[in-house]
Image 1 (cartoon, rainbow, N blue to C red):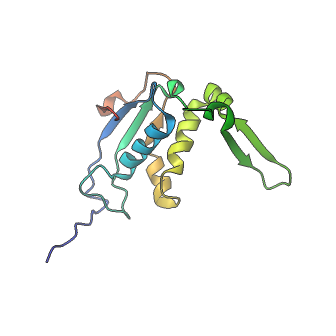
Image 2 (cartoon, rainbow, N blue to C red):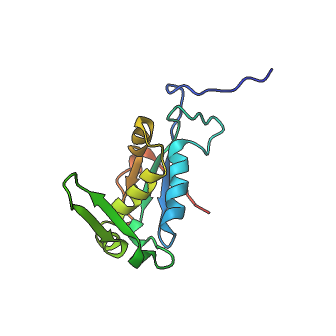
Length: 144
């Protein structure tokens, strides 16, 4: 009889990774970062335990959107009041708040529950090439 390994949250070892998002599509970077935050790159992946690693995304102001997404894709937010639907073109969003666009894309690819919110706290996004996490000795991760 083969037993399934179930990770315990106390026994999970976390690593730090740096991802350079320059000249890469937003969705490709976000999906691979979400998989690392979830822990799917480890053989000890357990769906109900936060066993992912910390990820630092740099140069997110240089990320690209393919096709017509820059002009046609909209970021939509709502208020409970009638008629308070606000739309922002991704061209404006990427110019002003590219770090938020990356965070929003990764958040949509994580589980939509308390476990997903905990996983999102391990993501750090920076517009430029500088980050303040050198003390953690992050490994450079090259995405496909």
